[in-house]
Length: 557
Image (tube, rainbow, N blue to C red; front, side):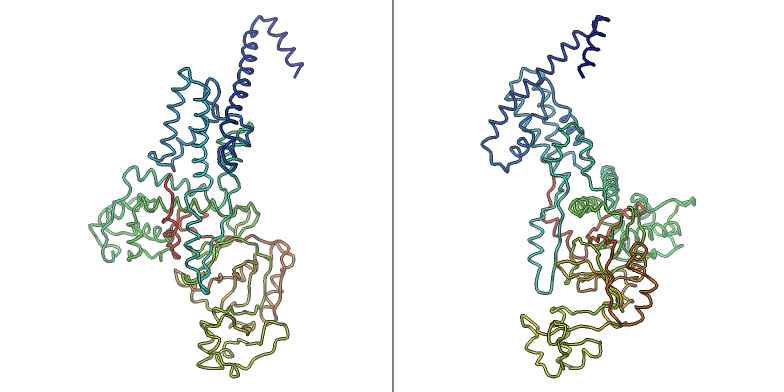
């Protein structure tokens, strides 16, 4: 560095230029240091009396009370970045408080730097921009869901039978940490990009939201007055309105034929595409559910997309090679590898009265020929009423009743027990277990990811329910349509799983545990708006009513 400075001096002397420039730069540097020193003292004295947990004190303690938004003669580059980023954020309404505060502070800064403003005015501007940053960072990083209020509503739903739960995972960056990184020589824009979720197709959903916002600005779509069934090849007055509606949402693509009032194959194809995107039976028949979905106003779809973007912010960001995602509203499992879809299958999830919890864990063990240890709630609600009518009811289903949970617990003769006393008791001192076999409620394969809810993925003997479009039928666990296909996938990267040997063992009834040497994270999520692996925007029914519950205390910025 010293050698560079000497070289610069020689060059300047020989050319007779830049002496003034160097002197000016030195003065500017000294002026900046002096301004920061004085400003830091004022800032420290101003914030010293605030509680330590208050944002401004916490932020500037971390920044050593150095101003980051204002400089002596103009706003800092960070301020310029913040203002530009907020103004370019299409997800924020122009009428939002954050954007309006941005315009107000820009005008205020212009006034201050065009006049002989005092240091106090500049420090006041510093703090106001910091508060603006806090509001925008909260919006960007945390979203608008009031999780405390929502958890309170979930708690009110809980009973001995209903185990409604939603576990959240705090975003990786906080407003303070993000700004600290940007202030250390980075870019605020780059830090916002770094903090943005990279999984669950967050970026694609945000793009789709921006497209819908533009559609809304241009008038959105109109109500389509559909009544009755449209038959292919027949003419109807409503066809042009239906075609325009589907064209706006990207479902209709012209087929090169002249457009008329006829419900033709081209329009029917668009209806099927729309139905598939909304989780409806895709046969091109305009039934009540399809008509309802077509006429959901665009502003409600925008609101739904915002809500689901905010949900993704609080999901587990895995950054893993392999990842299992089970989306409850879509009744589907997705197996990702290196960020791409490797496998997908239908699932059955919990009924509304027995909702599958939203949480994360890791698949650690696969069980072949599992027992089903029946929970107390099912014993009291379903098993005991059957035993009161017929003491042999459990034997017919291969369910053994034992005196306790010990390894050597004896079998119980159901006729010897007064089951009525346990119908509503706090405890049931017996273990009900269904032995391995094809009639077992868990089927032949079970995938364990230990968790507080005793939820797992498993096979099922009742395959007919997978033919249903809406599949909320379980007591909370996740039933798999093709569990052996998932077993086969695990066998490709686990030395402890031999698929061919497992197939032979599944013909018998002996239980076996396969501990995985390459475990896979699993996330049970609840997304009613998302972008799929083909880049197609999807909407699903709010089967548990969680959208409605979260909208009750949703913050509009």
